[in-house]
Each structure stands twice: as C-alpha cells, then as structure tokens.
Image 1 (tube, one colour):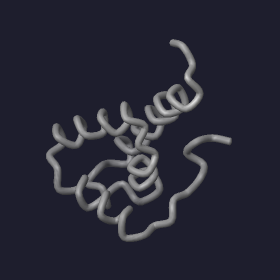
Image 2 (cartoon, rainbow, N blue to C red):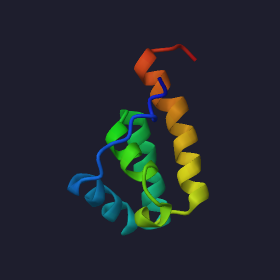
Image 3 (cartoon, rainbow, N blue to C red):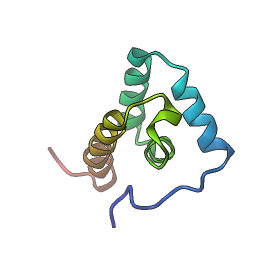
Length: 83
C-alpha cells in the first residue's frame, strides 16, 4: 500500500494546517516542508496533498512536487532503506 493512499479525514486540524501554510511566504513554506518531510510528518503531507492546492497557498505543481518528494522521503523513513 502506498503511504499516501490513505486519506486523512478533512477535519479542523487539517484545515488549520493548510491555513498556516497559506499564510507563509514561499521561502518559509519551503523550509517548513523540508522539516515536515525530514521528520516523517504524514499528517501534514496528507492535509496539503489531499486538498486543492490553493487552500495551502501553493500551486498544483508545488503540491505535486511535495507528493513526489514525500513518497521518496517518507517511504525511506518508514522502511528504513539504505540509500
């Protein structure tokens, strides 16, 4: 099963995550996304990836890039693969 295939329930917490991201500058959002991926934060990735891009202040391409990075980064963390 793909780690991103499980959809999170769109509740208040997911909306709060997207609201926070939409208020950041592109540079701060990018830095936070790097932290999200390095820490294995599936909830944040799902909150952004499972909704329309504009709700997080991002473009469709940025969300697509995040999803691709997440599959690589979070899969590696989950299964402990050596790179």
